Image (tube, one colour):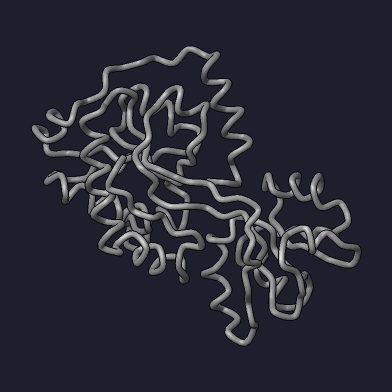
Length: 269
């Protein structure tokens, strides 16, 4: 995901210089023969993947992976895969595919392959109609307070790129949105897709996302390097899911609003 992009890039570079046990990936034929697709998911990442009160997995990644497995005609084996484990688990053949908002970047692409994009993440400004501004630069003014979460990489980004603002830090996504809804902060500069569902808790607030994003990242499904047949079939299945509207509808169902920048399906990949 975007909030991990800088750290993930450094992690990826570190991986390049550190030895990783490379195992031969299961081929598509082996996956079909065994009837199981091993899917790496982040175990603590609502609304991508998390366990519900009954102990079952649910979320956007869960629904998408289930649809892909149905397209392959196999069952799913869910493999909890923390953020730093996504690339090593693919390289060591502990999983067949990796989800968990796996942002495309060059350091990872030296070690794994990607499918076509699954979804985007948009670093942008979430504010209310009471606050003027057509771009993130317009918010870099004295007297503007931005809400954010402790430990987010965007805190450092804001301090470097928006030195005139004040920062009010809290511990959760919900608390961040609450600060703006209560007028204790003016806006949020973050991966706004993951915050939109919490705005529904404040229907009387006229929320708006500043039209011009800071940047858009593309997240895809990770596959072991050289596993071309599996990647090709997944790309075809993803094209069908994008074209049918399933992916966008699933995103909106879990995040409470449409993807800020939808992925345009392209049959030529």
